[in-house]
Amino acid sequence: MGLVVSIVLTLLALWVVQAHALSHAMLLAVILVLAVLQIVVQLAFFMHFTESAGPRYHVSALALGFVFTFCIVAGSIWIMTFGGTQPY
Amino acid sequence: MSLAHEEVLSHPDHDIPLEYSTEDGVLKIFGFWIFLATDLILFACLFSMYQILHLNTAGGPTEQDLYNVPEFMAETLILLVSSFTCGLATLEMRKGHRGALMAWLIVTVLLGLSFIFLEVREFVDYVGRGATMQRSAFLSSFFTLVGTHGCHVSLGILWMLSILYQLGRRGIQAITARKVFIVGLYWHFLDVVWVFIFTVVYLQGVMH
Image 1: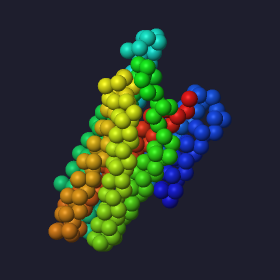
Image 2: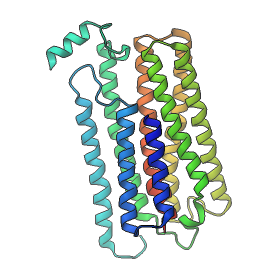
Image 3: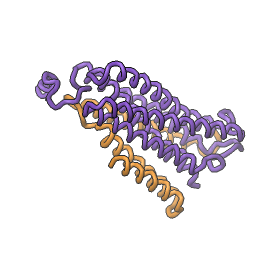
Image 4: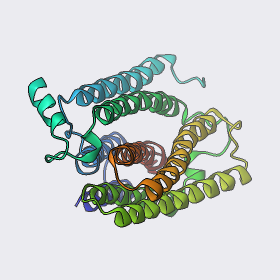
């Protein structure tokens, strides 16, 4: 089940890119959403991430990791747009 | 919550997986989740760097010149299937089947090796076409990001081989079960990172 969903998500992403049906920004948004769905599949089907012998502290740790990840990626890209178009 | 926690720990064989049956196992699994969260931050830095630099090709080869759809699709599908076989290994361990557990781990290792083989071949091909790491900011960030993932996968293969050896000698018990479970988490995590490399590096690269 997890395998089928993960492969379908991958092929779907390849197809939207190759079909040239959407604008650049839309396309980027769509494939990023597909990638996030893929994470959910991996966490839920394969990593059993809600499973634990006690309080689920690791879910909080993981959530914090995702927050940092988002801040680093979005923050870096945002800041670097202030540099204009010159090569770095 | 903490009462339930103690109760579960005091009944090791009551409906609780072997890897969670000792306090040591529980702590080590939790520690590994924290490692994964920090490793995620390492990859976040490399992804931001790639996203910022990928158009700075300094007149050298560009993404469209290099990326080859069948090649990166093969790498992606191999890694996705290996994540699945690794999941099957954990399920067989829960049922106490040592033979099936080891067989699925071996399949996972073989898929991992074919992934590394394809990736090395891809890198060698790029370098042969003048796309070396020092050619442009794009290529430096490409090789750093994809190469760091490749190093993680290679380490994972060695790690799984050492666990296979321990399973062969000691069978499934609390310690080896915990090790199999943790290497499984690591392997699925690498698959998650690859899905983002697939999306951000390869799909974005062939999109224009």
